[in-house]
Image (tube, rainbow, N blue to C red; front, side):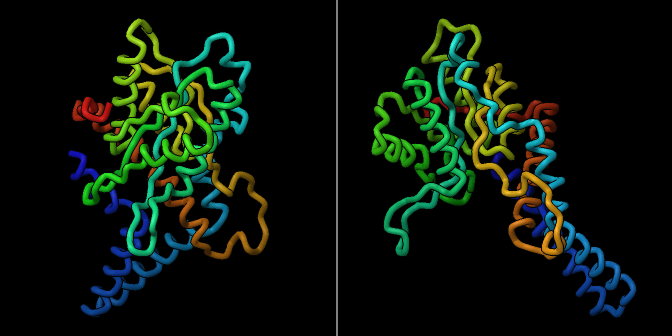
Length: 278
């Protein structure tokens, strides 16, 4: 199921849809169906243009982060009833190769890790950090992202015993299952699990829904905010850019992900064995 979903997902995302639109236009031109080719080309260009300008990127990302505050996590909020752990969700890593002598966390992972370490220190190290997740690419070997994050954290002064890792989950939904099982083992006497959840602001709605589905109460601690948090229109706002196309892509990706999880839940097809990653 995991591989099937990973194969289907790109087919409904903007890059593939644009490719399909251009392909239809070319085929129609080859068959001298000029009218259809014109409509296909025009529709594809409009689709690309809209996703590549600031107003569209703002609307799409705002739909995900409108309820997320930069100050969502307050120390005084958790002081009286402290959560069990600070959970950081993996955001990707690049393995070492001929050009890259050392493995590196992605930009999103760095910002999530930094936010988690910041919270750990603000809370005086009273709760452990749990870093969850690995590569979501079904055709690549595990990236070892969680282990790499722990190396960085320990190098920055975090005690190794205070930095837990979960290395098997490949999706947000799988991470939620694995996190619950770890908390069940670590805190067997707790009827209700509570965590501080650190992830990218645009990813928070899907992550929150996934953990709450597993019965975990969360306090959100968003990081890695989109650059388009405030709409200030100017002539450049209507010039296509890769930055705004990427933001639009991320937002569409998240909405599709949330929709897919809802369908899997309805069909009772969500299953994951996280035991070997604990």
